[in-house]
Image (tube, rainbow, N blue to C red; front, side):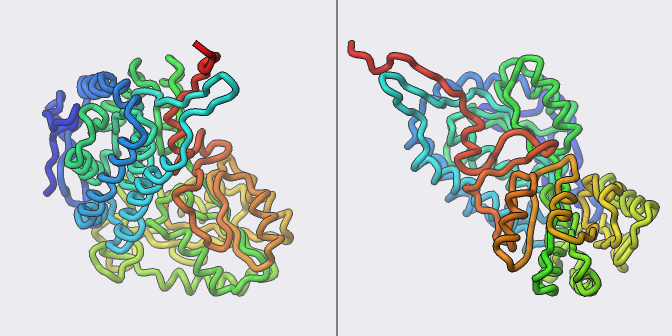
Length: 477
């Protein structure tokens, strides 16, 4: 049992003002794995005050000081690898290999990328006799989701520290323990008191007062569109800067010149990775009519090879859905797909055979999906693939862009001209060609209802900065 019923505020672990706790459930066992503090407005007020007290001092710290701080964090993060992997496995249900190779590694990569970005980042620029300065925005409120407990926290924290911004972090109450380990890392390496503050709790108790707090200059949020809209509404009352990374319904466009088996394997992994609980999941699989039959055979075979089960089993590739609420939502979408007339090619409602305990869903493939169906337009956040056919490349691009989202897109094929045409035409913040992978120094964010702003690397640092012009700075005295 992990019991962390204190908040980390102003460099100390202190009792939560509420005196209440939240139980955290292991989604693979449905059993309580620990408790955290259920914070409230009083906790938020203390944390924001601590951050505000030191933000000018931290803003004025040197680039070298911040680079050295990030370097120490990287080293201690690596020292805590075993603890981080275990926490993510237990609180999220991520298979051990996924917890290590994806979650742990992505968190580490973001601290490294922010540290390295400081080697070339220009905080000042001379223009004639004038000076343009980029300086930290002040106190930033960070609200992170449950699906990537290290990635989403690390990318925001690393950027804020590199920029010189102080923060108050509210991680998801469903996956809080990785963030608590991060707090322990920061404490050990000597992050100055007040620069980092952790307040655990739920949205109403912590998220709302943080978004509304008059001393918070910026809100950085990753999560659902409806919650992002509420945060934006609260932030608008005193014109806070807002950075939002929201949902997606990303197209995975298969071209007609592919190796069908390899394409099927790649498409399946973009659906089942992290149990489908990925905002960039390529859940709309667009296939040319000319190769559809062969592709369906291959994709069904690939999906059948995916091992769903106990996250502690080294052979497991897909773990449970995070909670009963989310499991029920995934089931409702599968039911909706059947109801709307899509062909159930593989999987379907219910749990995989032999997995009665835990929130395990069956990886599912729908064929003959119309892009206007609910399962093609709404984010399911589970391992559900919707196969949509097209006749030519222009039609594929039109289908890909026919969504309110624009977070990511994927294209797989041989013809470089066609690959590049798709990449330039799909309206999304990130496009991957042939599983190239996303490097942490590339900007990440969305078009349309997928968000506002960009994160990762130097683009992430920019989000925590204000721009000041000083006219006549270099005039002779």
